[in-house]
Image 1 (cartoon, rainbow, N blue to C red):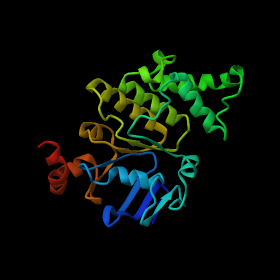
Image 2: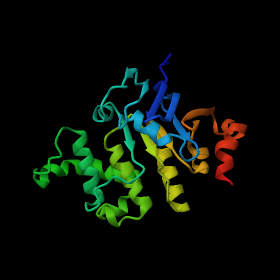
Image 3: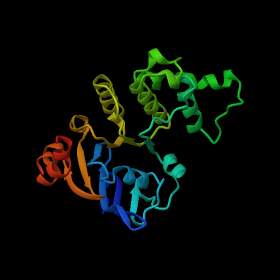
Image 4: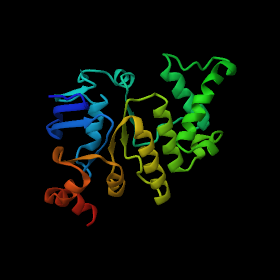
Length: 252
């Protein structure tokens, strides 16, 4: 049964592809205001689970409840309007627009059904102050006029998080936010995730165990599409099944 401090819950979540079971009977509870990590080896079903939660895939069976509402049959746009917003593994920004323009477009979208592309610049300027605040929040003030495609990879991911924040999510789903980053970028994005999680819930898929250890309040470990273990980092890292299925392969 859902408690008041549970913001997202799944019951028996399952996804089959022509006989292959990618996610099997996953029951997940995410506490409001927490950073909850979803980890596991390659092919464990993490991204499929994210796709189910954000309605880019329909479950074969099972139930998803967000904020006390059954969203199992909801559409992706409906989920986003409810405050459950996903940042994708592959950076999703407009490459030939500036940092400011990217965040401004996200702000425009959050405030109605139109991007207002035909509006005079003076009308659109009302979004600039908030856009600059979000840009500062993710450490990109020095890049406000830079074209997105020219940003270093880590900065581009920070821009993506800024555009996600522009939608004012109550809960963010981050898919591999530090994938392919240098050590310096990993530290920067880790600090950024911690900062933006101060007043919202975060569910994160992440391979970097040092990031998971530094950020997560609770961890769910998937293996072959099923929940293998759940608990704090200290608890799951001592679980022999996790060591064999995930930690062992990561350090092999």
